[in-house]
Amino acid sequence: MWAKTIQWLGNKARLIDQRKLPKEEVYVDITTPEEMYDAIKSMLIRGAPAIGVAAGYGIALAALNNCNKSYIKEKIELMESARPTAYNLFYVTNRMKKLLDYEDINASMFISEAVLIHKEDKELTEKLGEYGASLIPDQAQCMTICNAGALATGGIGTALAVFYKAKEKGKKISVFVPETRPFLQGARLTAWELKKNGIESILIADSAISHILKTEKVDSIFIGADRIARNGDTANKIGTYGLSLAAKEHQIPFFVVAPSTTFDLSIKNGKEIPIEERGAEELIEFGGIHTAPENIKVRNPAFDVTPNYLIKGIITEKGIIYPPFEQGIKNALH
Ligand code: MRU
Image: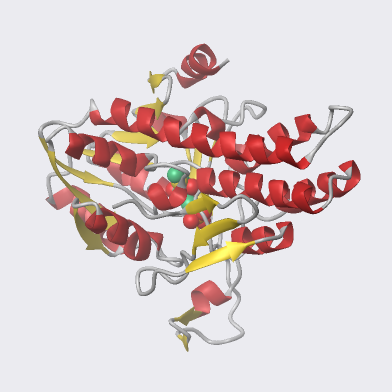
């Protein structure tokens, strides 16, 4: 029962509106690059690989409208400005920029490239799931954070693909799902998606993470990633760093699950990863009701960086990379 996260319908993209889940399953048709930019920025669609796939279609829509090189370049830059942290967005825009090097360009080149990126992303998630599932015992209790599932990719997910493939192999698993404030990707999206696909999930408050790791048997933790540096430092949803620290304290293996399209090999370590800061409204309101004084000063970083020494392994489509990560990443991905 996979969510139809992104569909390409020949001359438009159809996206499930993730802001409305789990209450309503609403699909929105996107017909212009500006609409796609708004969809990414407002988190109608989110999750690093899904943002990349969506941006590819946004650029295809630009080319359908006008195949002038400077116009397409402008729309590629528009996509790049939607959100700063997820590297998959820049992986896709870099691929699209290469098409501008051809002397003669046409819309079908951009559409084919976007469709190919989507197809490749789907295939990558299958491989991630297979490698990850090999780490799961026949009966296991796991934890994740945010939503790194079908809703966050063009396929079956990154971290959640591991659970889906484990289930396919007959393993019995249940997953602790932190709610992931302030946008509630855990409560609204992961809990919804796992339930739809028959995997037992147990919702917990973010503030319950350390307590659960201390008092329950959690076999391993699988998380997605928004950008991974050359040394394995990993940016993911805010709260992931805290989760990795608690995992270390309780000796619980902490795995990152990400395709090669999430690795930014141009940066040495996590200090160079741009961290998105989102609006105050996500923190001062809850369900439209003010829960903090209106003019309070707010910091709302949307991501944090887990240092490589807190990571047990990085599951990629090329296999599982173990420390030392710098060398492992070089061998696997160069
Ligand atoms: O702000 P979001 O919802 O786009 O953040 C998403 C995450 O942090 C995911 O864990 C990450 O993109 C991996 S998704 C396969």
